[in-house]
Length: 135
Image (cartoon, rainbow, N blue to C red; front, top):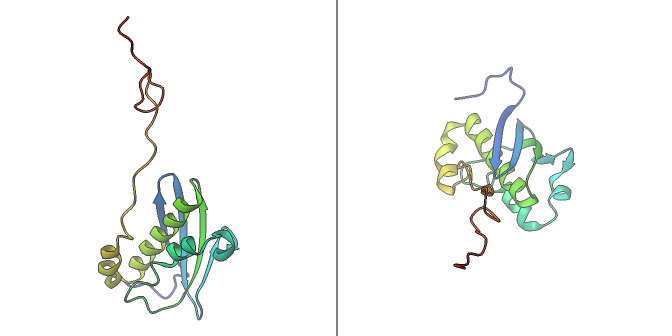
């Protein structure tokens, strides 16, 4: 599925836990990533989180350079980084279907659905019951 000439960008949504990232990629001469109108090196303070964000671009087969714009909300900083990676991977697949196989092999196209379990009535936490005594 190739991109038509009149389209300016390719959009995709990435999610993890309660984080949602709206990603737009645009072909550019040099790579740049902007998260919530700040450079991603400023938004994500550690090298580990920056590496998570750029993982999809470091996959075999991604040769083009892109300007990436991201709006991310919800969750923690690590969850947001993985949501951004998920969105970038989805956008790259929209751009070039050939990238689907290597990105899927790395696990970047799978949404991590694990969220905090809700608290149930009569329990202290999701599964923790109050102490029981026979008498």
